[in-house]
Image (cartoon, rainbow, N blue to C red; front, side):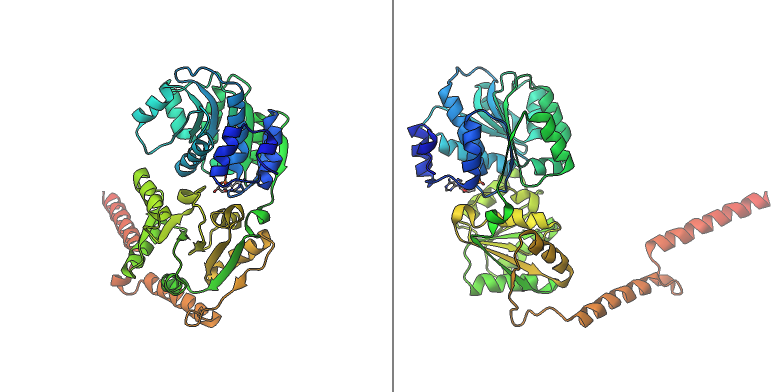
Length: 430
Ligand code: AMP
């Protein structure tokens, strides 16, 4: 199905062609006809499926069909997104789609100056993309008016709830007096999500693309069983031997990310960092370097990398397995996008095998194991031995017959007892 057949104006079709879009993706096929007719939408869709165009193109076309004079601080369409990166990404996509029409768009999010954002808001916007927290700050300062809002989108709504934005969302909703056409996109559904969608959507059209389609068809998944303390070496070896040029590496903790980047640099592999402790400008710079090929590896944590769109990204590595199987699908959504081939590699220690089983269940696919010689995980007996020595060490720490072995807590407890006894004795003496 072509975009021209959806009666988008020639200027929009031309911009889409320049973006390399020829046919609609499945989520676009389902969402666009309903959204063009003004229906509310409740969509179950992963990132990487083309959902940004699915919600933004119908809005863009409707705004083009009914042009209005821009007025100060006024916004016609509001798109809410959980992270700064995703908000910036959506705005960038919309800029690309609106290259040949007269529509203005801006993204506002935390970590950048309020003043420059205020200037953008003051001119009045056709489309505003925002993270909920920063939008509220501007609303409190009367820098933005939602009084005439016509379109409202919640992108990655599940993430917004996970990140605790529900009260911000309610405050924003309180300020909306119109009945905008509302679209909610989410990768997962929970009872809290159902409650929210019941509150904000009117007779929504329900659409869904299954997560398996979003990853499995174009992505080759592989697992390398390996002990935690050998993962770093394995990563350097694979990058070097297989000549991987652009690798997004996911870790669970910021500390792991910091360490890993240092170690990769020591191995002569240029790597950049993307995690929540980094300033917004540093994250943006890292992403640019990674996209432009100046850095071969980007090491990222879940939230920071959420929603990132890196054209043609060939390799994603789960250095740590995610805590939730669903997050595997989100992470892997960064590769194999829009029909391109992708490669999803997971390093799995014995302790992470349970997550792997859950992932396989979720994506309904058994993932191929590759055991690289020299990286075989220690056998179960060795693991057991390691765990036993760990607990033996704990026991040793807990011993009290040698005063130098005492833990701080025990020393403090003894001191407290001694002070108590002393005061009892003084009381008795009195
Ligand atoms: P999204 O799920 O919106 O993040 O989109 C994932 C990727 O697919 C982005 O790189 C989009 O530019 C691309 N994309 C979206 N729609 C199409 C399409 N119809 N044809 C080709 N690529 C697309």
